Image 1 (tube, rainbow, N blue to C red):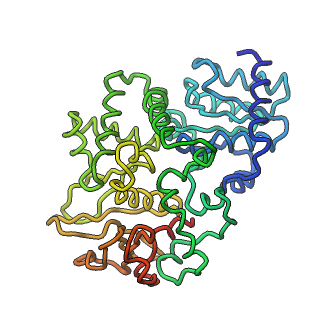
Image 2: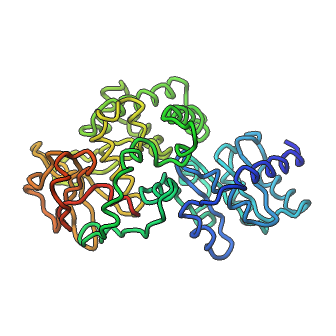
Image 3: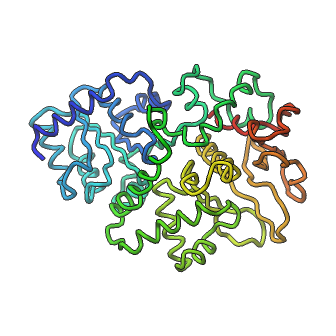
Length: 407
């Protein structure tokens, strides 16, 4: 692609975001980074990385936006940046979906070491940045861009911005009443509203099928070029099996058995899918239990395979896992060797071990028998639980699920 075309595409990219006033909450973090870091925005397709990257470009001088999937795969990125910097005065580069350039990590290393430029890039495949043979750790600052938290969704949907609620406050202290009144759009959020593009006129859930197709047939093969067409089809089968199943008992072994692959391949495929933000893996906690992760889907992919009412229990758990990602909190799921009921998850909150049961109608504190903990909480779906209207939240014991979404 010639230089004039690159500048024309940059001009068009800037124009697409000129009228957008709102920016993702991570904006201030990105603008406040000191020194000369190379920044990688990493997150799911559709989470708003391209828009945010273009907004950063618009706010910068002597800059250029490049979309890597419009370049030849064998583009010499170092030479291109060098030419644009030395001959055209470009000092800031914003490169979208950089994993589409072959050996991009080696080029990034050379650019960082030898050219006086600033660079921000995006990728929809975390593995592209974390598993490189090149040492990018000291050169590239990775910033996650997850889908909206519930708090950020409400703001983009038109509600005044709310201050974040720390998880410690949600777990153990009375929550201000103004937050308790904001659960009315939670079902819309679970149904796909956590992605910015769903707020655009005419956007429907079918777009998630297109995103998933792009991840499996484009993103993953771009990082693993030796993958075969048969393996691409097996990846589809893995996601379809998870999507059509409940959330209990989905692990390496069950995926291997039901898809017809080895356990080794099951682990490999689920690693690729997690690095591409399609699944979550949560490790178990407990003595004498099989150390295989519980596998859930990223919201709202399950709705490609089940109706909302059928999937609601799984969607609640998938929301909770994503909310903990927003809070930066590690969680484990609890597993019993005897098959007895246990709480869903355990985490450290405000220095205390907290067990959490996720559920709607019928879920209660009896689930916590024989579990060692400091605090126990039931998070119920205030909209779906018919009994929720007849009881009030109890700090540190029982709260509406959506409250953990105010990260």
